[in-house]
Structures are given as structure tokens and as C-alpha cells.
Image (cartoon, rainbow, N blue to C red; front, side, top):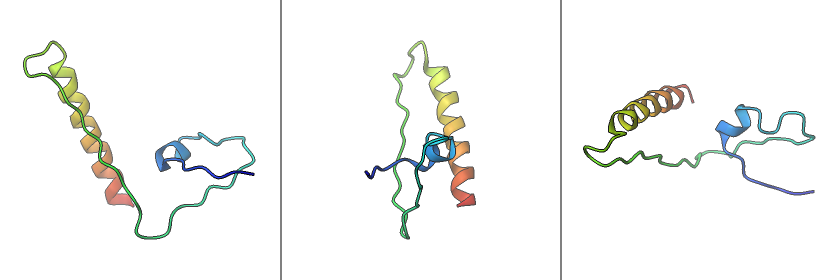
Length: 67
């Protein structure tokens, strides 16, 4: 028997699929985390980093409003 912490995103993504486990959410208040994207101004991948940051912002703003 054991206990572990599994991010909600991983649990909903099927990380425990097929395993004989029980997933229990935390009671309120739910603990969160911040995610950041950093890039070097003028770097070769600045455009991709901005696209990724925008995608993550839209994804997590949408999912946070559903919670």
C-alpha cells in the first residue's frame, strides 16, 4: 500500500488507467501551481515560445474557469 500525489492533469490524462488505484481530490482550498515560459529576446525560437505561452495561457485559463 502506498500514497502519492498525482497532478490532476495527469490523472485526467489516464496516468493511472488500468491500475488498481483510487484517485481522491484534495478538499478546498485546492493547491495550485504557476507555470512559466521564458525565452531570450531575439532568439531563434522566440516565435515558438510565444505561441506556446499563448496556447498554455488559453488552455489553463479555460480549464480554470471550468473548475
